[in-house]
Length: 347
Image 1 (cartoon, rainbow, N blue to C red):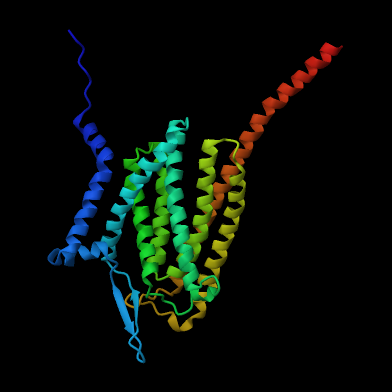
Image 2 (spheres, helix red, strand yellow):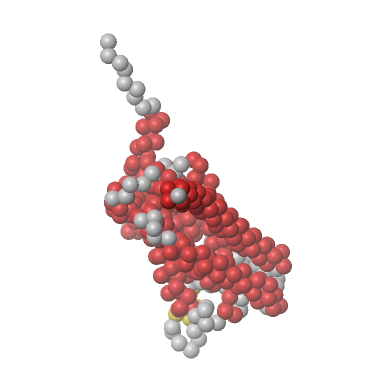
């Protein structure tokens, strides 16, 4: 009598089917939204998913030139959802077409494989966001005139590229939550990734909702530069463990960006916004949140986040230093024993 094969349960098969075909499912949904956007009748509904909402047009008195700005509102949730689907599809495309091909040439463990995929995906995102965000900073001239961070607050009217940048940022970090399931992330690694995903969502949403897009942008881009360098260094390390110089540059820039973030945050919330006395009336309708509790809350949130990041940074390097010391002690003992045996032999 033959042995029965242990078939997988229906629940396991469903999970496998979802994971294997989630990219195709999201692509079908994207096509559905785009198709509905083309036709006149359903376009009124699907337009809030595809197009950026809350357009406000200004016309100057002396000319017919029009200026287009954008506000935010509840319909942005639908837009973020649509671009989250696109992010899921692009994630799968990068994984299949690029990262998997590089992974086959490397002999990595499961833990390193997960980190390799994480760094590879974030490398593309940080590089794209860095180039896009730097172009916006250059167009807005924020680096040349830091007073624009608080001058004429609230900054409730955004240019298209600024609003679309924030929509895409939120879409990417929201898409990272289901990707923990789609990428079969190990249970012990989920809290770490979920922690920084939630921090990104909280800080980017805060800058967006509190009408601080300029401050959020000028803090986001240097941070993305540091993260880009870290993940690039980690990918080089996986290919060759002797390539560790990138981590040294990353460590120096990490500290500098933390100081940059704290300086600009204190300057904006501690001095800049407090000097605009005429705009200190709390008003949700006007988008004015320039009141003391909000300023203290924002300043405290950023400072606590930077302190937490520095604490993790210090603990990481202390642990790495202790491991290096432990690895060097046996080598010293071996060399000392060889010297002693050599002396005995000569005697």
